[in-house]
Image 1 (cartoon, protein in one colour):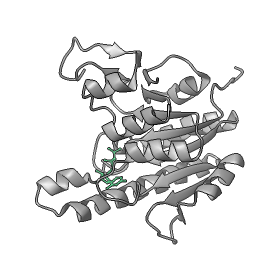
Image 2 (cartoon, rainbow, N blue to C red):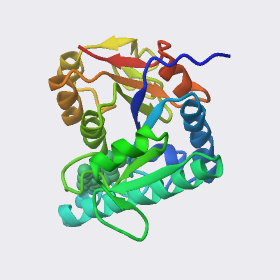
Image 3 (tube, rainbow, N blue to C red):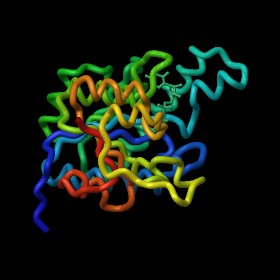
Length: 238
Ligand code: UDP
């Protein structure tokens, strides 16, 4: 079928949960299926950058609650994201998609450093650029980095692909069977309701720069559907 994308350049945020299939570590089958979805839209000519989370390894705030010093715990969290980046890179390359990993913490043996102008060039050449190690700064989240990178590389939308939830609800759909899904939400509504599915700092950065966010479930074919502009999940926009 003809592929008529609604976006030319997107920033895809994949949380760590996606990589582990809900467990600790990386599930290669899950990463392979996500790589196939990304390859599909790249072949259709869409430029794709990815920000990768790391909650399948470590979350700094959780380690802090169990006695670790917060900054060090956050650095562990950031390093975890890089393993997810390499797994995604591997499966994309196996599918014939060119990739570059760029990290906010320099580690020359495994990745390029984060150089925005280089990232832009890679994307223009059809390479998938995978951003790892968050912002390189403790106390931030990869959601916030996703909004920042989306703005810096001029992505038209921030696509937040989720595992186990298919959009934004007025209460936790796993706990409340009557939870209602939003098709569309303003940034201010999202923040006023204290919703947790994305980070408040990310939402406010998107609001201040009118960056649209699509929060959706990663069921097979969904990345392509969102990129085609199909109404899926929840759109957070002005
Ligand atoms: N992190 C950080 N600074 C950043 C991004 C991430 O310190 O700019 C740390 C933080 O400890 C976080 C962990 O890395 O808990 C994993 O990232 P995140 O929780 O955003 O991953 P996700 O929830 O998307 O899996």
